[in-house]
Image (cartoon, rainbow over all chains, first blue to last red; front, side):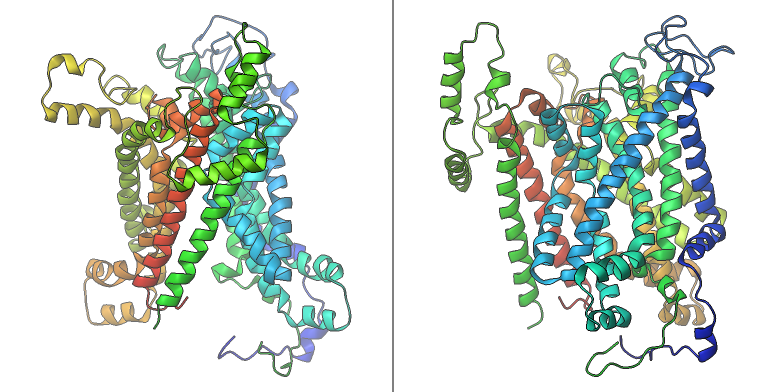
Length: 316
Length: 322
């Protein structure tokens, strides 16, 4: 760092208890209406998915009327190509779409987080190898790769979750790496190392807690990406054929020619549901990331202040 | 001299990525359980002997390492292999789809870039107003749509007005058309898929242009220009736009890499016989050489575009020192 002298905390500051990390995240959510709206919308969809059997007016696998029956007071969203109730299908579809979204984002978080941590912390050869690998995953065409792997592995729900997670971890790895690069050089980490702490202890006790909030923010963003990917896989006919998901509903409507009979009610709702969830994730994730990512020039880590002293030969 | 070093470094880096890409392309497809013969020899009368002969003919009976070596050697000669399905050279099979895809995806990206820059500049210029809020929200709204779904929406709205599938009217040849009519016919078939791509993608450009514009508008020289009494639009056009187009220049270079790749989803919705659709069909036919060829082509074009973007950035921004 050039030009700016390190901030020296005065005695009084040091005596006051440092604010808890959790309360910081909470203050971000409170301060940004976008984040609150996003979180509420997400919560609503999660609740709908959880209580699907209670909310859904009909059994989604039971024929309750004519093929492509138009919306009415009994069937708010009409019926689909098999005479199934669209509203019930949508409610049950939320389950698979959200499970794929969250689980795949979790897989991406684990892979990307690990790669980012190791790459940033150890540097050198480890960094070069891991980053080269990341570069390859970035340039490889994602949808064709998903198709190939889905076709080879088979179309179960677990496979689809794994495929999506394995393809979309690169952003996480890169952001976490750059964050770790800066955390690694902080004085308290260097002091811990000087005190003889091992790599594992430094990583788990000092580096990971610092990057964890950012990791959560990126993971929320990857939920949106994963839900997109699920609709793509389902649309191209490689989804699990036994499950109902929003992507599958779009595919059904397309392949059973809902368009030529003008059955818009079979196509519009699943797409709008995807838009709502993706927008919610984007709003929540973006505002968290805005507040947490140092590359966006917001120094959240200055919430805690440390007494710093020039270490000889080391610029701060 | 500033530059040579940087150019060499980026080029070596790109070449290394190419090497990794080639190797992984081989691994991904050969590591699959059940080789191509299991789907090619699916007929009821196919004997195990026929299958064995097929394996031998396709070179699948050799050890993996030898297959890899042969693959590299062929590649060095520009030979991508023969398609398992049509038995024609892959390169020949891919040529027509690529020619179909390029203008369509190109038009789509053009729409997205023009729309994105326009929305981004206006949103930054009128920051905090309804125009800003509306422009950004609309962009995000389209950005959140699954491509295939937006394509279907456009089909519902405009399917009667514009042709909904294919790359040209199958009967146009009987009408003895002039070249101009052929061009118009092709364009008409291109509009819906290209518009879908353009609408889905313009959001990212709009957001980037907006934030780099806002950053540029906060610089001291903008204050000076304002103090000189220049008009607000004049400042935007002459001073802020120039610097804020920097990230866009590289972003545009980057997207060129994806143009060749086409777009599987959009091409599937509109049955547009481009490279995306060809890849899609190759997946179901287990046509490994086709897939490998398509993958390699796509990966190479993205790597090349990355290199161009890096070099362009270096050329345009004197602050970059490698």
